[in-house]
Length: 100
Length: 406
Image (tube, rainbow over all chains, first blue to last red; front, side, top):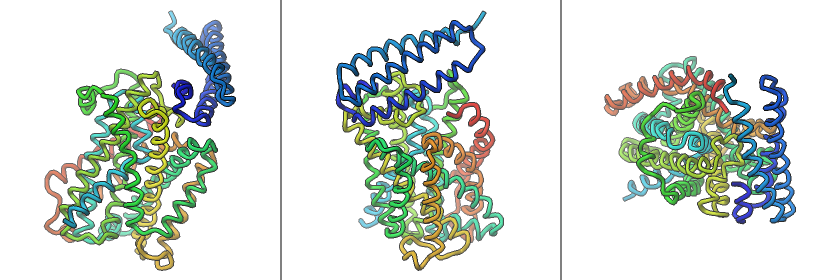
């Protein structure tokens, strides 16, 4: 939604950049929490951590694109964010699914 | 004709001054997380504040005492100390949150971190309190606050299902995250039934030299002003539900998410309108809370008070708002997250309600103060209900803060 705003020119770059930085910080915190939690199966934990990592990378690339004002880079990063978001949702569901 | 103009101005002032960082943040969080389901909390809070504001105004107009004055005189200074300390503490947190709200708006507008804005905002607020008159502060900022009507326009433009909106006005049990749901309900009630609102209103009635001829105007201002104000809060909730929730944002835990509410509706102007609404609404509230701190202490200790007097004529009064304003900026200048502080202070406001509302039951039924204008059955029933609600909120707030707080 934030990147849509930037692409449409309806939100200033400084705001979008700060927002993406804030999202990046949140993802870093989540990553640390996942790594410190030891109750899940190792495979699920790794998948979730990898999805968060992909999301962090995509968000960081989007921010760099916004700061440089490069629309194609932001557009590409936006697609990566969407893909990472889908993987994250799937990994999250598996991680928190009831265990037999 | 003059009275009608005063009523209109009073209503406009109430509408413009209703929305502040607490009502905006809690309504946005509630809308994003639970759709229209928590509209009932805004409606209930608005009904409660209508009653309290009407009573505070009636008490001031008839007895020529503010509520704080009345509590001290009727119950003695020792009894007054408890509500004094509680309200001062809650007001301090609320004022800090309001300064944080302005600082966030300035960060959004300039990209410079909110911490850097806390002291300049406090200085500007202090300067206006030092130089301004009551009328300037009350009416000037509140009229600018009418920019918050953009949320009402936004809500209408989104064409919500009005039947679902009306259904939300009826309390229902949550389908998920029960602790968060009830914590949000408590925070909304805290933001709506804020003691500074009715305490400030009674001091304002004395500043504006109200007498018994203002009782009708008081009723109209309390009823219409607060209803329209509540409508703005409901609009924020509707916009959050229809914009944030439908775009997958079901948790507002970062203030950067808030401007996204208006951008899809108004485009770039949505961003500008949000920043302006947040800055003006919070700045107005910071001025009012700062003044309220000074009113409370000065009235409690029997000092000379009045925003229309020169600071040198009431040094105690002006020292209190000076100190309050700069102290409230410190937590924000130190980097405390304004959104978390807001939600916490709104919950604490709800928990402190019994201390500030119980005296209404005695003062508004005391012939020596209000003569024949004592509370009727409905007003007394409302006060008893609010006191009971206040006690429930006081008991549940801390557990809910632990299990459902953000």
